Image 1 (cartoon, rainbow, N blue to C red):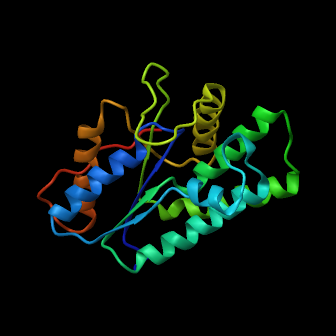
Image 2: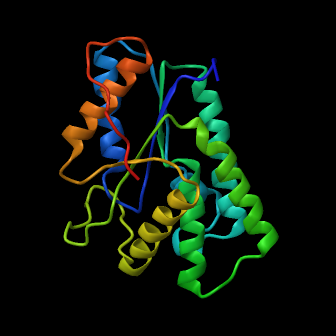
Amino acid sequence: MSDQPVTIAVVGTHPTGKSTFLARLAHELRRAGLQVSTVADLGEQAQRMGLPILWNHTWTSTLWIMTRGISNELEAWLHGDVVLVDRAVPDALGYYRAALEYRGEACDPEGAAYLEMLARTHSDRYHLVFRTRLDPGIPLGTNKFRDDNQKFRELADRHVGAVMTELALPWLPLAADGHEAALTLATGFVATQLGDEVLPSPTSITA
């Protein structure tokens, strides 16, 4: 769409460096003189409202995160050359499926189809998506409360990846030790999209 700025998102289980990467990317883009809008992860806001998250996710909490995320993205379009999204909408669907498996529950087919429709129809709004992968050997950070339920983190990692495959949504890997390379790819992509050929653009996006 002509009125949409370049939109870059991240997906992946928690915590695997998504917010740290986006903060660095925003800094680099702003240094280049670009207006950058960010869309934050909605998990903590949902929790403050009393909505269940992580392995307690419900259909309602998932729908709230997806629709609020879409709304926040649309608002961010008004204020930046580039929009950075901490958790693309399909990420919430992966987390919901992980929560259902964790609890041994099944989703109502009609409800599941509605969430899948939202994720599928919104996915083409992302110009570039990075996906983190869980590395159990990397310790959890200590700068804020971190959920340490390793079983659920593994389920979320697997289900987010499965949703990305199901939606045929291309993504680039964001390894814990690969932020520098990812920053180069992202800034080059933005430069190319905005008509500035100074920086190289990524040559391929692998799924």
